[in-house]
Image (cartoon, rainbow, N blue to C red; front, top):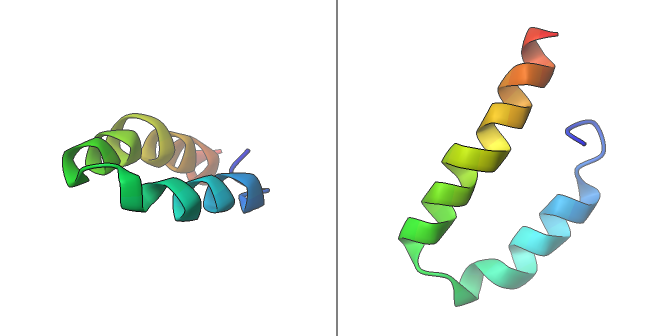
Length: 42
């Protein structure tokens, strides 16, 4: 839920050191940014 980002932030902060940058970029581009864009548009 974009209005309650605490769980997602915790997940990202814990796991980001273990993923290569291309996976982080993909997660942002495919999952996180679209949710944020939809929420801003509504």
